[in-house]
Length: 172
Image 1 (spheres, rainbow, N blue to C red):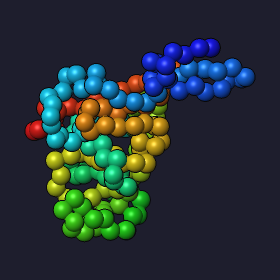
Image 2: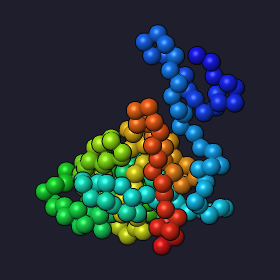
Image 3: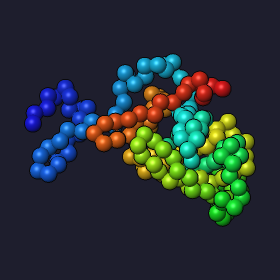
Image 4: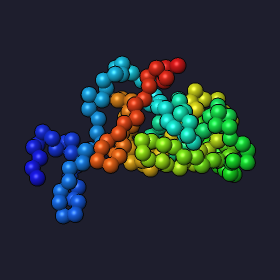
């Protein structure tokens, strides 16, 4: 199989049963900025399906090490205290204040055809977000995120799927 040099940056060659197979790479280009206002400094906020519900204002934060759920989502999903499991390790918030978590809950998140179980740490604190998804979630779906492009890209079979962030939601 030959691949022209102009296309090599868009493809990753992987052996498959003795043959070379071209798979699209997880990458971003200027075309991925179409539909966004540039320059910008908005956070990457998406809508995801959590526990079967469309949940808006989910922050994708690749620098965070913990998946967080805030009170609005906890109430909106009609979760009960008996749904929680104990979690007692303190967290440090964006404002560098220590937050004592309420507890933890494991919930499914649908992304395309993938379903990933996520351990959310439930906190009683104000946030403009309903939840924060972090590195663990990105790694579980084998995704790459870009705040510049306001997108999350992840493999799905032979294709690359996208979650597109909302600048409007981020500005509210």
